[in-house]
Length: 329
Image 1 (cartoon, rainbow, N blue to C red):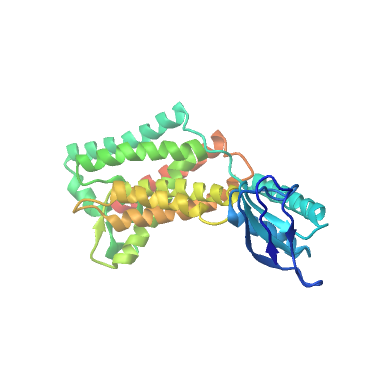
Image 2 (cartoon, helix red, strand yellow; image 1 turned 90 degrees about the vertical axis):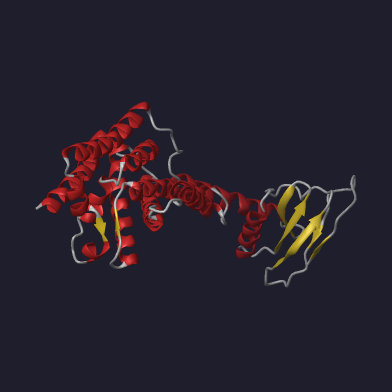
């Protein structure tokens, strides 16, 4: 199965295919350097997409090969099969486009001023909680009761997975999480709503702390909201990965978004002698999985309105307050 390249100015190149009469086949790629592709068939800059077209035609009983020309990649078929191939590919592309439209998330939106204000108000509440503990003189006691101590978590004190998200070692620790936490909470709120964003922070932070406790086994303790903050980063990465999977050509698309999340962990959460890098990494992983799962129900319906957001936010706050009541009991 071969193709022939003609010099510039010559008639449109004719691709000759030699295939068994009853068995469609796919040839290696043919170069048409300096020539135009066969008329009527689609052209793409991506080789992988042209490979998909060729496989679709083969499945329909038409022998095909991938052709590279000065315009991009296309497929070549036997003389007399161009029109049938065009109809098949047009139908396949319409079906794929419709499926992507049904499953793709709404286009990402920036956080509204209200989203940002509520996100930073919640983040400032975390700062106020720390300052209040420090002023009351009960900081050391609540650190002991609320930190995520791996051995105690594995023995059944599960509430530490959540209480640890609300306490910090010092002012610089809580200020960093207030700044970045408010920013990423607003980013997720712009896509899912503020109530769901807060619930995502709580659940991914708890899951990240649980994975960290299992990883270390016993002699390890940690505090801070950063596990949940990186959970929010993971949510954004998971949603972006789903979008790329549905709208981009198959291949590396989803991994680009996840790689960006890992880069943020490395830049924002990987330095310092007291930095719990594994907790940040587990938070990112929990968020990425959660974001991918959330993309499914949100793919073909709008995000919940005020009532749904209020319920999600109330659940999140109930979890945080309730776990502290258990810790102090």
